[in-house]
Image (tube, rainbow, N blue to C red):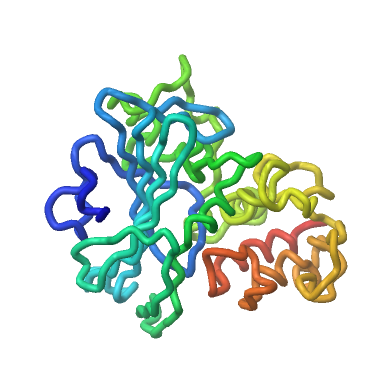
Length: 318
């Protein structure tokens, strides 16, 4: 099946113009994936709505689809030069579970084909400083999708949570706008100011010292917490980086790794207060070695801006 056979977009497919029952969404703290940009959408069957949940992914009606398109502008400093869409990931809500489908775009940018085994292909772009960047882009296979989307063995969406979606879009709160449009069922007397919300780590100027913790924790929740939580694939590490973890040792502070190896870089603890250079967390975020780097999937380049946030947070720790 081709992506164009779904009723998601109208007109030229590469324009990603949403069809009826499809609407865009934005998150507070996106997953870093080698600086790829994302265009995110949700499809809801006619007459259906999502249901709000406070700390887990929202409930979706059967037939709903979460649509995430990955792309690079040809030139980050001149977005008017256009973009290349690389892949479209679909999460389809079925009767009992979610189904992941991976579509890879053709070079003509006219359509995308289902690739259950994923794909690898060269990609290059000009970054914001005009410097050419090139990687072998990896579109994940379905097993790799399950590796990150697992919660107690169940496949769950990532990013469709109150803490990610509770944000202003334009002049209106995104959740309240969806409620008004009949797309989301919220609790009675819902107050977005009292609801969970991650900091947007992309905002500038850079956070003050008082904001370092919330910003760094938001980054770690989005980029590490889906695996590093008591219910995720990395639960055996004993290092939990989701936003709900408040125990310093379980967060990795002065905690030795469960297994010594080159992944530790000869450092002794996950996080060493005041010493980012001695923290395993930073060592693995900095590494581009496939056997060391974290996250294991979804990146080949180190995220310079994310590293700066996490280093600054650790440096301020007492």
